[in-house]
Length: 633
Figure 1 (cartoon, rainbow, N blue to C red):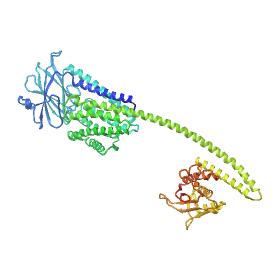
Figure 2 (figure 1 turned 90 degrees about the vertical axis):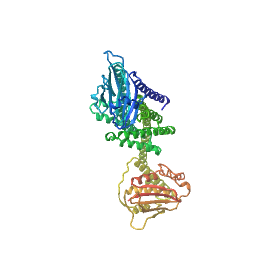
Figure 3 (figure 1 turned 135 degrees about the vertical axis):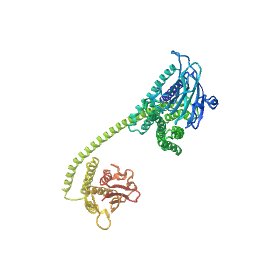
């Protein structure tokens, strides 16, 4: 990745995160002249009533919460007491405030406002256990209308009990402020989820294209979008307006899914299988906890499980950052800097949200939503990673295609050259056969035999042998040779070979006592193999030296077969073949070039033995030159 692209990626992340924190700041700093003096009373047993907590003598039992309220995951009931200041008269001559309670996933929120006559309180029930369609104000958060009889402030009470985190952020706005604030808020949320949806759609193609990492990212992105829709109250408003049970459970399920999907995705992208044992253990445990805790919202144990899972999520992010730093230093994983940036954004948002949901930090709007706001930065870094990864893959694919094109051109050139060589050899074989036949006929007319005639006849035989081998090699390379297996006797083949050769008396046959070795193979091809091996042995051994041809039954890889060895002495070390090149086409040992030959004999031997289902090997660590073939019976 070039420096310019990296700078663009970092500035994009800074812009997105900064813009979202700006939105949060706007949402938190809307002029709230009507709210103040928040204090909290803990009701562990849930036995308090509005009559008991509103007594003047109980005022000192409420503890001030000037920075917001957060008690973490608990089943305790909390009573909130705050003061609302009367706004100026509106156009209709009335005084009204819209009191907004956030977040939208509170279960049971009861708001008590003083009656106009000063005797008692009016109660209104809020929470996601109530149908959204029955709300007096259709808004993602819980909104309480409060009317003032005069310009004096009012003391309002709220009773909160929830299975999610007991955290509340409160705003008091005039009707006009609330309308402008809600309009802007929904517009920004539409932009926020629009960006997520674009990222989701952009990854679908690659996720189903066979890339497991892209598929894991799509799962994580889907879970993140589902979770964010839930915690922002949009699932309740648009998907479950008349199903409070699912509206309540959907947010809890989304919170569990985001942890499990993030653990699964980062485990893949950070190659945790190769990480230290403690890192692997953290990721494996948290992933399984996320899966096992999915039924928790339906079993009534969500608060207890969520405390564990949130801490596990923080450990996953911390371990992931350490792993990303390792990979970045080692330079073993491409894009590790992007992953590190994504994890840093996650840690920044997750830390503030986690501490708020656990009751360590106060319940302020921007703290509650810090993870929501930072997730765009996380996804932007990951999306940049996949975009650049895709470009790199495309570049590599283009390079591979070019290399494939070059290879294809080379192969085509080699094929054309091979065809031309085959045609030439075929023509040469055909054209030489006729004059060689004429030479044999002429030599046969010489009445007086002598050394000159013998040399001439040997020369003709050698030329004829070379031509035959060239023709055989061409047919083998072109795939024109066919195997025709039939029962045959190895002893008869060798005996016929010895009788045929003028120097066959130098071949010593060593076969085991007992019945003749029989096998089912192609006798013509096997005879060719033996002919080539014995011809080489006779040609390159000292004059009058004997060569040894042995055969014995031998089992190989559970198959019955016969092992044939051809062994001959050499007159000098230079006559020994190179083990690495001995079966190469046209290869001949340096001293072997003093004798006529084509360099095709051993190449043909190996090829034909493979066709027969066997194999050929040269045994270099012997005093003599030894070739060994194995043929299945």
